[in-house]
Amino acid sequence: MAHDHDPPAPVDGGDHPPTEYELLERALRELLIEKGVFTAEDVRRTIDDWDTRTPANGGKVVARAWTDPEYKARLLADSKAAIEELGFDVGPAPQIVVLENTPQRHHVVVCTLCSCYPRTLLGLPPDWYKSKEYRSRVVAEPRAVLKEFGTEVPDDVEIKVVDSTADLRYLVLPARPAGTEGLSEDELAALVTRDCMVGVTNASAPG
Amino acid sequence: MPEASQGDVTYGFAPGQRVRVKTGDPPGHIRTPAYLRGKEGVIEDRQGVFRNPEELAFGKTGLPKKPLYLVRFRQHDVWPDYSGPGADTLSADIYEHWLEAI
Image (tube, rainbow over all chains, first blue to last red; front, top):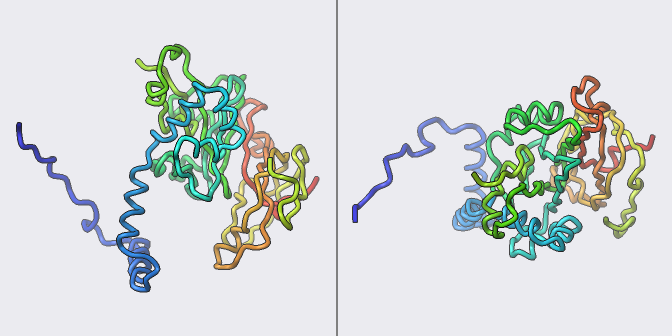
């Protein structure tokens, strides 16, 4: 068996002077560790935990809703309880609300004030979600923005933009693609991408 | 939907009621986006009661809790030059103290 190394990669950080916010974060973190509020191990474990949360978690919730109408009804009525049924820890707050895309309505989610995002189910948001361009444009010209993501929403379908301004986080339940009747729940979950749970795309059948 | 009253907090608005977002530009940690201030919409849902984020941000208790609503706006009411269909909407979570009845 060949002994392989990962290709050499530049180490991130240290190649530019720290920004004001990086210095502030470091100073605050070191002070809190010194005061015994938390330990360096707590910080490491929390970062590790966030890095293991991925859109695959949301995909499992969506696939269950596609295959089990009773689960879908529970998910739309009390999203937090239904998500916890599948073993995902969504924490005490913020609450998650699931928005169902239908033939009459397409949802797209944004946080114009910062970067609120259903992180417990999707992990950390992508850079474009946090960009000023997405945040300012998707509320004012959602159809043009969706078109740039390759998503054409017919004029007879309402686009509903949801701006998560406060204590709730929104997850889009995309429509199940046509031609997926024979797929298992796991195969369906693999079709559910991060972007379709934000609402900038639709879920597509494989191939 | 949450009960009409939660603890000591009572909702002042009901789903279906028309409201206007208050204007003004106070300093601090405001969760009401500037682009919706002064706009008219309709209460879509009661979202629960939460500690006031405008006070929490400054180390206060945020109590008493404030009712939060999902408010729906017609895109053409938010942006006079909106180019999409008339049925397009935008909803946002707005705290009660930022809303007034029309």
